[in-house]
Image 1 (tube, helix red, strand yellow):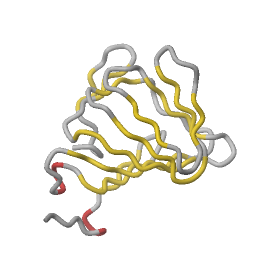
Image 2: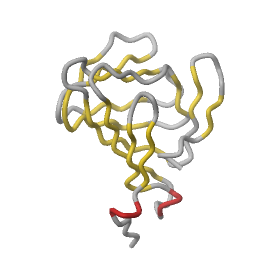
Image 3: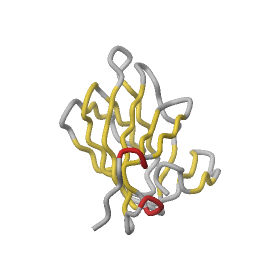
Image 4: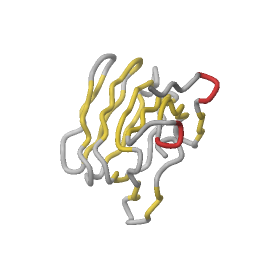
Length: 126
């Protein structure tokens, strides 16, 4: 059994969100990563694709998931979305309340921006 202590969790801040890595391959997870995402009201992540499937569960607030070619889907507390690998996506936090979510996916997933730029494996996933 692997235990990741609170003191060992990583915190990564971007212009769009704060990610707290709860478990990942570099924190003792075998192949999976799980992290918490917190976004301020109105914050939006960049359009990007991931090479691995991700599961997002909104814990607090409201998020809109914009997924390549689909109508936007609004998620509230307790709602879970499975985002398939390779699909262009963007997460937008509600403009009034922001959002917090727990996310899990493969610990070796890579991010690619909409213009094709390979961003590698994000720090909060590795």
